Image 1 (tube, rainbow over the protein chains, first blue to last red):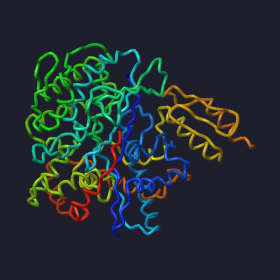
Image 2 (image 1 turned 90 degrees about the vertical axis):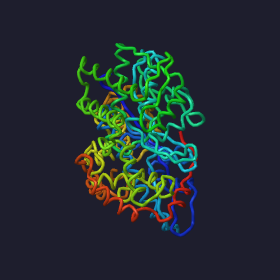
Image 3 (image 1 turned 30 degrees about the horizontal axis):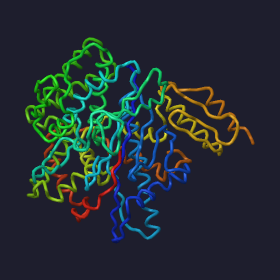
Image 4 (image 1 turned 30 degrees about the vertical axis):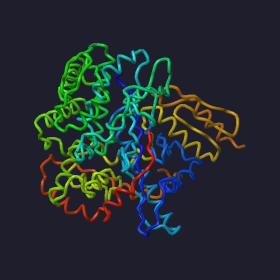
Length: 457
Length: 61
């Protein structure tokens, strides 16, 4: 697909650190965080004026799902707007808690694992055509996703054989299947829950739940951009290079734990390429594809160049090539630098703390944001685009219809509801409008519904 | 957020975002990293072990 709908769902980790010794459970902290949301939308599951969905998910995780986006910069801006919206809620919750006599700080982490080893995700959604054979898709995509952590892992510390080691991915140790419909019990790489939020005759949803959450916008661009390129390759039907893995789950852990990229990944064919060789092969295929068909958006050359630079950095063990661009490399430099400076082992609690606070979304103390302020981490989108995305929907997708509906419906003071495909007036005639086309930016039926809602009772 | 949203800070966000957005001038600014490593201790909560241990939630998806 030349023009694809993307969406990112990000679950945040939440902790409250009291300065007065009075702890709060995560459930209590989450309840305080969402109080203004419930007051605004009468629910802890709301669709906002920017077309996004904000809600409390399983395990008291705040979750922000971007609106439908149709280009990568827009998607990244909308994901970052989610951080701004949650930061705002943190500020209000801390004030409210202080009024109630609780003094302390709320932390939100954009990461994938807590200290006890519980995991939560960053789910990627790609709209794909129904006519593509799903088995063929996953055969090609799984080898890519198992090794994609080289490009866009968030970096993590893992205890292996009584030794704390730096690994590529937070999420790799928490997936248990390649393809299935499970989510929390036994997480797969690709989840088959097929909710296209579009005409199911023509479209289906590809739901990738194996990825690490990205702090770096550049890493995010590479993560989504390379996946889209591989999808285009598959969609074209042109190539079939058999890279099917013998055991994806064993491989994904081994690849994460080997910081050289030289881990051998056994294929069903009996071949034994390294993780790096698989990535080089996919890069070569994607590059040739783009040479044949041209770039389908302006960031393609940048994405291909960055893809190559990351693989070169790992192959030559010269992480300096990417240590302002890629989360794992930025974090690796930070953690090893801090450990060396303070003469600490990687197992030290202060290193674990740094590994965690790298993902703190607070711009004044979150370590990633401090790095970015100092020019030690690159960005992709302009701050004005993030600011605009806080209350304006993407102008080029159905999110425009939803966001404008939410804004206008609220102004009427009438009861309404909205979700990904439905806009509904709850108080009287007019009923529900079903908007099945995610590429549509206007719908006369929604205008008619709003006209009804604006009539005096 | 808009006027009628649940947001409490509209003006602030702009300036913060502005500060956040800096294009790095390539890697290797070692002095910058060293400065940051010095600054880090002042922004981290003092009891590292308790801070890390205190962050436990139920799993999500």
